[in-house]
Image 1 (cartoon, rainbow, N blue to C red):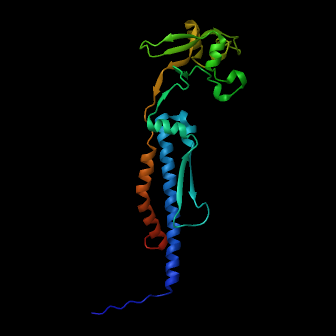
Image 2 (image 1 turned 90 degrees about the vertical axis):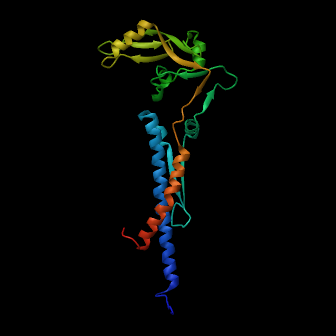
Length: 242
């Protein structure tokens, strides 16, 4: 038996067209996979920390190379603008006070509720140095004996608004709340009755829970990439329906 074969058309043109299809397919696959990995990492942050971590979630960014044109060897990069935060929650880091300090000073929710708005001195977070300089800070030990709550005395500031809502002033350093919404007046009065507000938690160390899996997201992306590339190449070369 004899077999005969011949090439129909210009071989160089056929090969060149196939290479161009491969380049387009490679870029398509890399773009799609890079975007999917980025969205997965953003989703990890959002599901682990909730809506308050939108800024950390959106800090994940991506870029595909080359930025213009086509290539059979493209690359996708996914990175974060807050690498230290991500690394700590991926490893489940153990955090201790630096410089030989005995305690970490962790601000509570009462400390600078307005700090994120940055409204001058009134809006800045109270620092440990300010607590010491004020001479008003005092400690309350945890029942476990492993740390302290660092507090400031609480007083009522000048009432504000037509309804004369209660303002809460911590040690003369910061306004920690105002009874200016439904139900907040009773809360403000209850805080005044206690006469103090917790500003910092003092702990010898903090063990962060492992909440993120960055390495896993990258490995899953690498496993998906070959199949995505083959499917894209078949579409580009016309061997399968789009």
